[in-house]
Image (cartoon, rainbow, N blue to C red; front, side):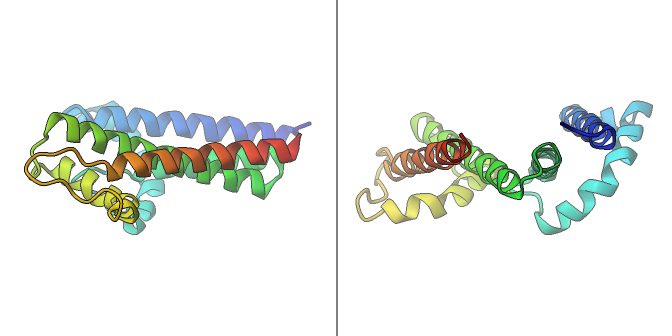
Length: 175
């Protein structure tokens, strides 16, 4: 059972996660951060995101500090709710694996749709996922002349299996 202080902390963490999501949505609209509401959200979150941004700079022009910030807060809420550091670590590892899975899926779709290789987002996705595709290059060499790249597909399958194993082995260990 959670104490009243823990319950208040969990509520505050959830509210702050909501404010971070609002900040991310506002960043998609030019000029939204210059409105009164945008300035309030910016002031309320910048103290938290600035140190994260120093450690994890924008990738391919995309600021992912709010995602890292949300994962950290969610892991903290899991720790406060369960009292288990292992549970919080598994949560962080699970979210990191989901993020990698999403990036690999985006890369696979880029392969289907022949995206512009010089676009900053394409470059960011390719560079951030190559570390996972590289171990499979011996089995699936990089295609030439517009062929499909199977190494990210193999990496996707392996990371997905690791995600399922990490989350289910931990749950089975608790039950």
